[in-house]
Length: 358
Image 1 (tube, helix red, strand yellow):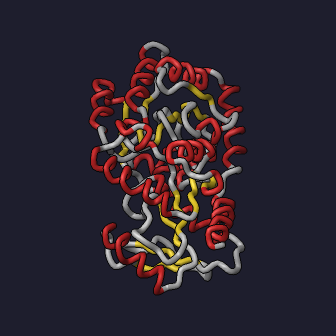
Image 2 (tube, helix red, strand yellow):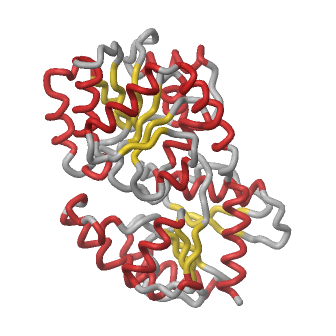
Image 3 (tube, rainbow, N blue to C red):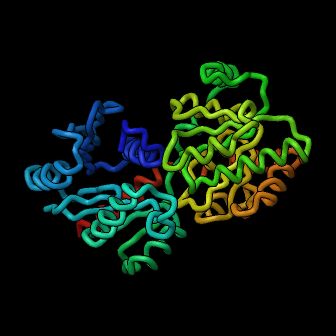
């Protein structure tokens, strides 16, 4: 998952390993299999081993099964896709199953792969991990997973939550060709139908033309399935809508740090990492009431119906007009963000490893 611009999936793997490195588990011997270069140094508890090939067919069909025997693994932890077989019990992380509940959001290729691989992997797994109670309920209902076979473990924030000074942030924005004096509304996520960016652009147009706000819209994230629909929606307003594409960790933190407000209009999120990152930077948040977002945000965000452009407009308009609301959301968001950390995620994940082993 790491190095392939997998956004949330990559953040999960990096964060979990960071949590294990920071934790106090004395008996842990974690081997991290990877392709390309290791992204951080090994530690006494965590070692990196490069796989022979990036091919998923070789990795899942032969190499990981062989390693499970040769290295006498106690547990093998995978994300979404389990190997063909394993001598060690498999722990499987599935962040969400949107491909099953809303196939229209996925390309035919991704839909074919996920629909084949994930259900088989869930059946093979000794235990399944997901990020929220909302995603857990959905997986149980759709795949009839026994209640005691799946755990919801909250995850920590991504790199966008890391502290950055305003001066440094402005320099990073300049590298993205964003004006340092420009007030802007920010959203973060792949350009794909689930992120609901077409409605966000419609709401932005309403905020500027009818509600009298003078700010831009910055959309951070790589192009994905049906991203052309988002670019078409931007249309003539394109000079006020800025697409950054994929950004570095530091650029992402800078985008949060200098934004006026953050909005996440997704039609579904199994967790919603960007809202925690925005909160950690003290940015007021307006977000969809879909999926796990109410569970993750608590009372630290203004929620709206993602299918209602007018509801989205009212939520953002309320934040921009009310300085006391902005202050309350900023303070509540910072407090809320502290409740999510990777050390806690790693501790709870280790408990699942021990259960799978027993």
